[in-house]
Length: 559
Image 1 (cartoon, rainbow, N blue to C red):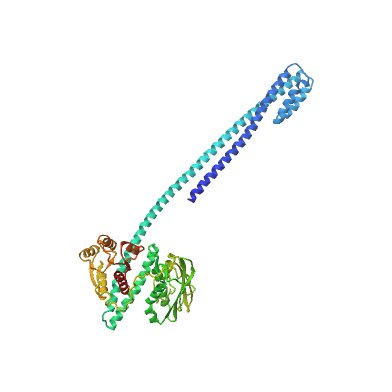
Image 2 (cartoon, rainbow, N blue to C red):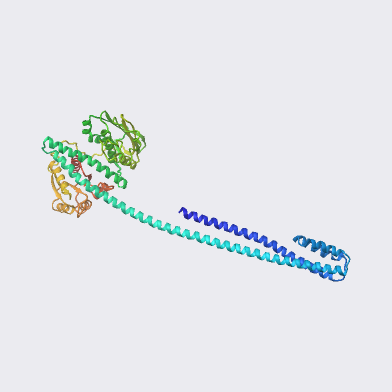
């Protein structure tokens, strides 16, 4: 586009220059023509005056006073052209002398000579006038031809540029179309990969937990525990990669729901309770008393950031303590900004590595020592999650003394009391939690069928398995005496969304439904709730989490 503008500018400048040059040429030519025409007219007058003087001299002899008017006029005309000055002096001398035959002859010869000289001058000036006219015409013709050639070249180049620009635009449009298609393929690939990876991971993790609950020898228990630990580590890596891919693809959703910060912090701490005890570390949680009881934002993403930062703090700390501090730094009538600090007494981060710890695939402990492991995506994901919520994160560290990660997040808040909806009481023994309850599980994966069957049966429930949505609907038509449905979203013949909508609109059933998915893509949870489901869980799931959600739904339904 810049090249086209430049060429148009050059075309305009050349047009202006051509007009100026043409005007100058015409002006100069007019001046020369006017001067030449003036001299031609003067020459005609001189020739006429010489003729009159010749006729006068040819008549009867007269004194000089009789010729003086002719002589004065002729001298004035000759003075303008500065021609025949010697002849004029000689003519004046002859006219002042007494008239004789020889003088008349000499005088006639001088006037004839002067007449011939003026005629030659007239021819020369007429020829010069023609040359000026021709030069002007040739100059204008050459100028027009040059301008035409220049304009033609510029227009050709402009047309070439415009054609190239159209081609580039067409290429860009095709590239945009291909990029959109590639993005759709990426999203579909990401969803498929998430489903295909999480589904077997759900089986590995769940079956390992079930195995650990069976009678095992110490060696078998140790081996099963190793499998569980390795599966947990693998799941962290998988989640990091999938979350990073979802953020890059713009498929990560940010919720706006009510939650309790205290519940989030204590829940996060409980996840690492075993690891803290194993390493002998102390965890201190300091919550500002000014923080409202109910915040409005995304508790899941806050929990994800806290788990990542706290997990790193525990990983890189061998002794001492870890502190989580939350405080209000800014507050208005409806919004506030919270500041969080996670401080540890671990190995710290080198000064050279500190500026790069939030870069993708970067690790503070990078080098020959890889004993801490990890994908190098955890802090990158934290930073991007915080950016999506309008927050920022920074880090400060002293090698050998510890690190502090500071981030802030804006939240809404409400002063209304907590909902009266009953919450399931934490249980340590789930063996009789679901006694007498009947469950319909719509799941196409055989391993996940067996896993959910074992989990629900272990807690005292009765399970009926459906391989897809169509079979689940057939079961509900024959027997509607189920307490709860666990619904997989991706199934053949009829997926979880269509099945739920059919249950709500066609069968008119209000039975609680828990969505269970291995995809976990942006907007999926909202789509589940809009289709009529009551809860949303991702695979792999924690048994305790599933029990608590079922207990909450069944207690709420019976309340």
